Length: 302
Image (cartoon, rainbow, N blue to C red; front, side, top):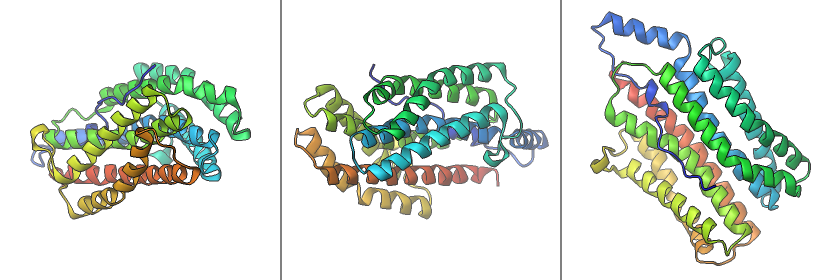
């Protein structure tokens, strides 16, 4: 089943424009912050990215690429997924979620996600024990698309239940949506490349990698330089611009490896390991970028 990253409201729900002269709106914002609404939305978004981290790390580990690092990242992604899913359901002050989930619609989504996630978690544990476990890897390949869809549906529901109804700045909502998708796509690039590495003649894997790389690249340069036609301004602060510039600097290194894969040329284990490491750095950068844009979006409140 082909899966492409979806356009969903991500952290835009916590970006609000509140008039300081309106006590009712200020009180409403305070109440929302007290129950950890913004944190619930952010944790739900992290689950979506983690679903792709698990798939990417598992694929590289199974392929014997950067084995120590990819095995460690697989374990961390599984642990991170479990911790965040439990935090959403039962509450976790360390994640800023105060108290258990009480919305029936959200609880149903969490239950549905657990049904999809549990077989992946079991398979990941088996793969960590034996990197050549074909059955475990096949289960992850088979279920990862469903996990992405289930986490996306949960994010949508959490956003609908907990989003601050005060009007958003439209441009900030667009920016936060794009940045959130970049974290997902950083791992999707790695995963698609790994699948093509395992079967260089696959037209399906080649097309999927080409599309994911194009989406990531277009968004990366749009965030840095702006894309007024769709309401995306250029990087609005020096800190955001510096981070984007740093992310662009080594993008040519990513493209050099990816382009060889896309033209049917083999890459060695060292190049595959380099690609995996570069996309891990991209993930870290996109997660940091999310926090910077969230902080920037609150300028109208302060």
